[in-house]
Amino acid sequence: MEGPIVNLVTPMNKDGDIDFSDFENLINYQNKNGIENFWICGSAGEDFGLSLHQKLSFIEYFEEVNIPKCNFIFGVGSLSYSDSKKLTKSISSKSSLKAIHYLCYDQKLGDGQYERIIKDITNISTIPLYLYHNPKRGRPIKTKNIKELKKIKNIKGVKIGGYSLSEFLNFKNNASPYWDLFCAGGAQMLACMSIGFNAHSTSDANIFPKLFKLMYENYKEGNKSEAESLQNLAIKLSQMIPRNNNGEYSAEEKFILSLDNIVKPYVNASYKLLNKQEQESCLNVYNIYKKELLKFDK
Image (tube, rainbow, N blue to C red; front, top):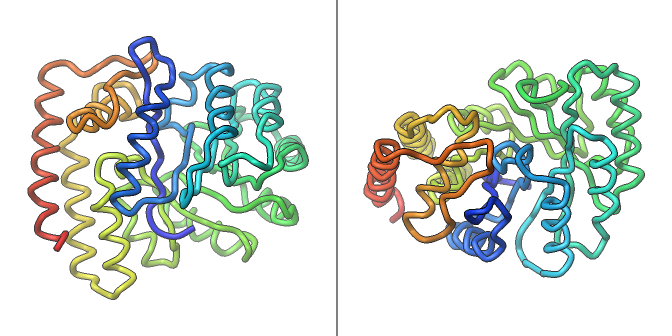
């Protein structure tokens, strides 16, 4: 994969169930802005707030629909390893999903046991697996693990979460040359591309897809000054978004998307919706984005 990978929000209705009509609206919106790569049921997708039944219904949706020109990578990580296996087994080779991703939530799990679990999942899965390195939420993938796991053919790559360039380079230096490697965090997309990564994941691209697409295109075309200006705009806009202590920014991103009737602003039961002041701040971000983007989208 190349370019922006959207850590996609999960559209929901008022009852907290997945809204598949809004999901299609969201994918259409992203496609119109040049985005084709999607990380589904990650942290921004409120994976921890979705039941096994809801995740299985998501998988069933991908079994029944064909969405061309999109790379969907679906999260099968769960606090219950048996649930992760159920999710993985339910995905057929005919699915619209291109791959799965897995984050181990047991941070104390030993190296040998972690590697065994990954091997089990690759043996079960009919589609490739992306590993997920996110030390804030799950078990980190150590250099020792990388060297062992790169022997497995069905592993497609690694998403490297966090904000340490040294960690990014460690993966780059030790991973299989056949793996897709990409980093995360909207504020460091340009920095990661400058050290050799060709793709980057961020939830900010839910609401600023054209900005990240233009940043990538300008960088690849050698327009470094333009790419830097776009990166600075992305940082500025992200810092202006109010943070309401949900942990992830799904409520803020869904509210901004709701301003264009793309998705509804609802979130899982453990999150709270935005108050009036937070909504006004998000509306201001939305208006600034639309205005500033005109300077670059020529």
